[in-house]
Image 1: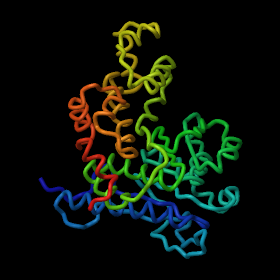
Image 2: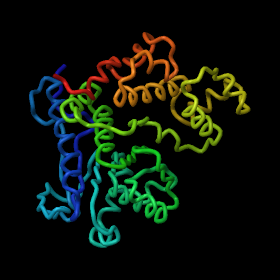
Image 3: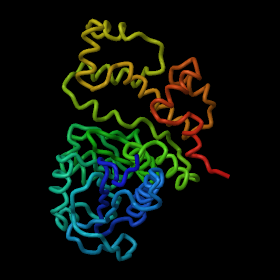
Image 4: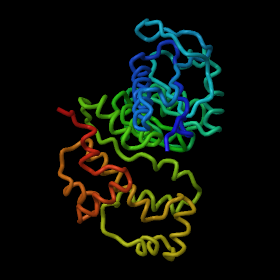
Length: 332
């Protein structure tokens, strides 16, 4: 069957343009999603027609002047979108708040209607000021850690992570981690093959001094079951260990039946599937940032049988471990 419409979950990406924005971070986001739009269309056999819209938007719909004094045209004012990108900027944030009072209500309204909000470096201040990150985990560029923590005490600032996610709110510490975030979102909306192609086309020379880490679990911690939350944290530390869920349940004062019911009720996942995802996401980071063998990675994430690991990896990603690794390596 031939599709002629973009994916229902992704029709428009809006990238916020404000005065003193780092133009490089703004255009980086535009290029990633424009290429994904073209790649998605090609995958569906529609040629190179864009499958979804990528708009540069400013609070008043007028052009902005970047940090390096480049005049940047925009496509219009603030609008409904499925994904919103908040690039990095260089200016006093309180000045920007006074200049652009439209931004915070827009972010709150878009998040309420289900939009995915992504912020990079200083752009995270917009999410934080909106109140949407209160009680949730976030990160930002290392230079802003002290001022961010002082200004936003209700937010759980994680200085050890380059990427965080919670309730469709994504934070990237800097330009390289933002690249990993965009690839993750492209995979989420357009599939693994499109994400792989975009990564191969753009990221073949990117060198990381960190592992991209696990994404996609932050929203599953926004529940009120403190015991299950403790178990989630325990699993993040011990995912590669040999253990039985029966023992985990007993150690936390539950029968296995009660544990299974409470875990799925709180997280939306069965415990085994949650554990598999933790392992696969960790493996993704190792595949993209190291040259360890598939067998070694399989063992490090908890699987003695590399063949079983490879089959499970393909079930979760549509790619073999070697194919996934190829997207981060330059092709001859």
